[in-house]
Length: 95
Image (cartoon, rainbow, N blue to C red; front, side, top):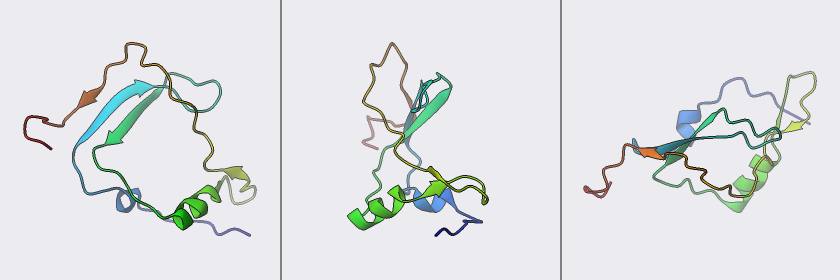
């Protein structure tokens, strides 16, 4: 059983913040290509266990073949490898 999602506002899923950090890294699935800019917000998003379970059940793909899991693409923490972490957070102001 599935329901296609026609419109999803990612903005509505994010916390109210304008402060973040970024770094250049790799994708989380094999080949792990170095083609990604990761964004880390300075405020966490809190969800319940039920919401986490529902997210893990999400599938992706065309309506004709919606079989690929949306999640389970995480991998263990990787070394920094001299990557630069950038931020717009002013730590002196306590943002």
